[in-house]
Length: 420
Image (cartoon, rainbow, N blue to C red; front, side, top):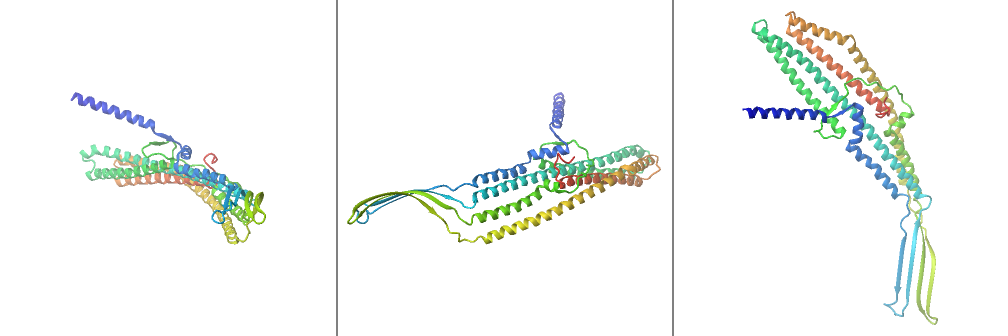
């Protein structure tokens, strides 16, 4: 028996130590800190970044001359008169482009690099925004669970106070069972809320690039985020990578058109050759000949590229139209998110004013009246439900205000460091 008690104490000590160290090992993050952490650890973002390296590698292959061509020829009359005649030729040639085709290849490659960089910047902004939104979602779920736990404690306190009165018949058994039933119902709601909380944290961990087994602690509390006062301007378009990609698409189409026009005249080929021959000719006799010279080959520009140029022109018009549409979308986003953030702030301010104070007073008065047998259980339950619903509405309003402020900041093109 003593050994069993000693072993039990050891197990309790180990569990306590594990719980303490597990809490210490939990990763504590603020909202902005979580966004920065995600930018450093998200694997999908790292994969997108490799697109820049690929574009730079493609540039290394552009703007270069083709490899020179070395040729060698030998022939004799062994299968014919076999008089010892032969012919030897050695050459080296190089193709050279006309009309600056190589420089235009480099221009197109530089635009590809800019497109890859803007794609990466867009992915960074989207990840940072979505991480903050996931953080706010987790805070909202935690706040909802906390509000329900507070109501449950009040219900449990009432049940505890009713139990002695139940024995003295001052409280009807049905009323006591009603309170217990409401407690059980609230416990189930809390369990469901905890599932939602864990799910929200799981989404956040995915954004952070963390394994699900790693514990995280949210250091911020659910609160409003001050919306930016910035307005739409050309500076917003400069900060929006998704808009810049449409502008770069226009530049890329123009560069491709220039490249096609430059490629209409194919590369000329210039070479040097050495030729030696030994011939027999009557009545001259045997003759030896050596020579060196230059060779030039000029392809005729017979192919038409009108279809390719027309295609690139259509793509440029498409990119210009999409850029104009994106500008209109950005203007509407800024207007919408600013309006929503301000409206939700008014809702929160209204609750923080007299409404919250009055609701809590009514709630407490019903509890006191019930203790003095001056209020029915239905009145108490109604007060509980009203208080809980208002707290959840406040929590939802604060979360929605924060979400719309985050959306607004990123619609304006601000990143984590610029939003203030």
